[in-house]
Length: 396
Image (cartoon, rainbow, N blue to C red; front, top):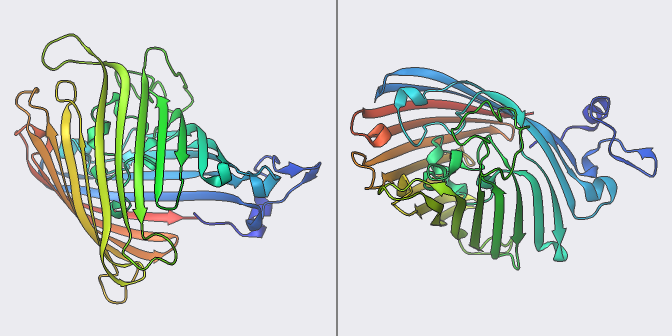
């Protein structure tokens, strides 16, 4: 996120409504008033060069923009933060060419311009407790893997042991849901959080993307059920004066209260749930943030109603591996998703990805990637796919 200079912010006051006024006086946008205007763009070219359903290339683009304001600095409303944002997703990806489940791109989706993350957050209890309400993305805060950031495959972000087992992938990526999130951080090391969200971000059990294509069709309830998550985490050696190697460990669970098919032929099941655990640990440090880190994550769900009864991700990244490129990241990861044995004829899909982050500046990052997808779609019908990708991230 880039903070705009004072002259640019003053020009923008002619566009953005003058809501930042106190005591009848208009307050201009300045860096020291806690107001950030942002515009970020991610574009990528991906090519399925062999295997899968058929070869070919495609382009995905994602623009996100908005405002985030510390209302304590801007208006004197201490402990309040406001975020309003929108996004535009466009292009034609290669998911259909690969024929995979896990999705070789984590920015491929239905093309649309829509209302995006928009919420208000309030801090309590000396800032150890926070409540966030509005249009929320669960994948921004739950079951995250910071170490897996360089990868393009979606399996290393919002995991399939949640997305493929709940209704329309859950509140993640480009479709937030109305919800509440409560976060408690009693110490710098420990935290616990719980989130409750609308059960269907599409507002269409059939997955019709036209119903809520622009993010304005907000219809909680209506038989859609509720989606929820809970997570406890421990972070060690993250204090500024810590000498040891940092690490993060998480244990969590998720649930959906709707009805789900019984793969064994019985009556539909009331609800579905799953559990997960993850760990990230730096194991070797050169200097500062430079060095080698490992990660692992696994999730499980009941096999009688979950297409994916378990999956896992493991990998490593090295910051500063190449001499003279001290903040670039080299990463290698593996993910496997297993189809429940109650769905006959299906097995598992495995992905291995090698990725690199060229950090050209704080506002410009280039990410090449190579992916090998074993048994795309887990049907045994498609040859293994080899996918090449090149992504560019820009912030303005």
